[in-house]
Length: 129
Length: 222
Image (cartoon, rainbow over all chains, first blue to last red; front, side):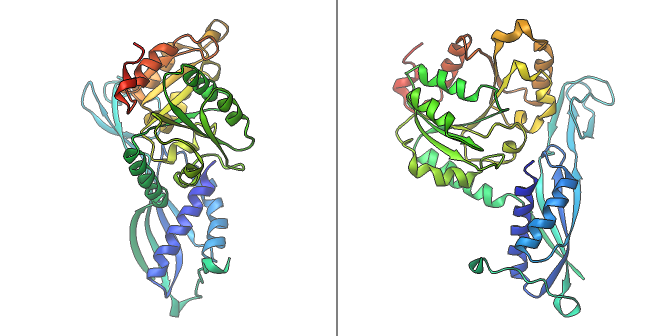
């Protein structure tokens, strides 16, 4: 539901990075989204198309790496990953699980093309809006 | 073609505003509670109960997609209040809180309650700079909610199960909700209350007083 807010934040972050590498065109954006972050990847991709067009003036691809939750069984010590609750230990079947991570919302990297080799993606001047 | 490594938080602008809010609240010695819950869970009713106890000084920031109805209720209950209307946005963010603070008389009060937009999903992603989060879950919503909305419950310092007066009429399983909370947020304090009848409010108030920055009020009613 808040995918549009996240999409706008991604585009703002990308715009900031692009300003430091002024002569490049973004082709694709790589992000990491935890599976407990409450984000639906397809909805985020859809929203990002609008956010990027508005903020960056172009629409680079969005590669989404989903991050699982890390679990540790408090009964048998087994380490494992999972993506949804309720969870039981895959080794002993008990439900006392210590868990970390899975709420990631991270911009990982941008794949860019040198301006000389492709169309320049002009970022909008915020003052002109 | 080249790759620019970035590795930064997508919500870093929100995190920055949240850090500023947190520093400010700490300087001003006010305990800030960010309250999450579904629409109709009883977030406002809980705040009315807390305000009605009359032994805590509190201010309330009401977040709603539309209307000032909740602010009007809190005003009647005697709290200093400001309504933030998000115009359809599904959550409050740290910047919205920051912008609203100058218009709210919250300084020199023990607590600032931020009633987030009714939604168990989106508000969980946005740190407001609060001291702690609570989740209000009503029995009518069903006992499966901790498993379905782990992000909201995972960060909760307290879970308030409201509308226990309705238990005889519902299939709400206390065991199922206990299992969910034990797995998602084993350290959260759990309070079972009815904001309608007042049942269970006293233990919550007793616990809450421990967070008052004004030691004189901590044991004012024991």
